[in-house]
Image (cartoon, rainbow, N blue to C red; front, top):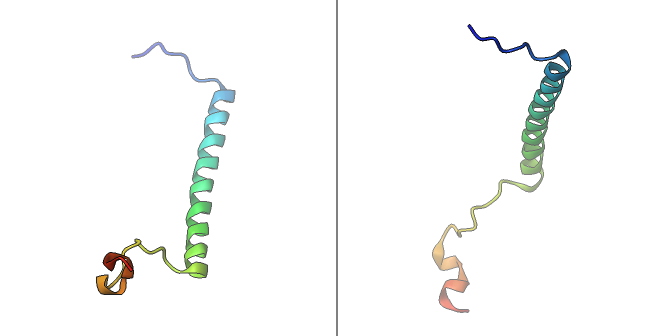
Amino acid sequence: MSDAPEPSPQRKLTIRIFLVLFVASAIFMSWFGVMQQRKHGPKSDGKPKDPYEDRSLFGR
């Protein structure tokens, strides 16, 4: 049994507000990322599909 005092109602409310804001921002950013991919296409990994198509490998 612990003798720790109960958290105050104000502290509980503050924690709940930050938790809701965190979850809402995560949902918004995932939605925003999907919209960006639909608009601009998926982000490439920076590597060419065929290395022979990349002229920078041959110094040109």
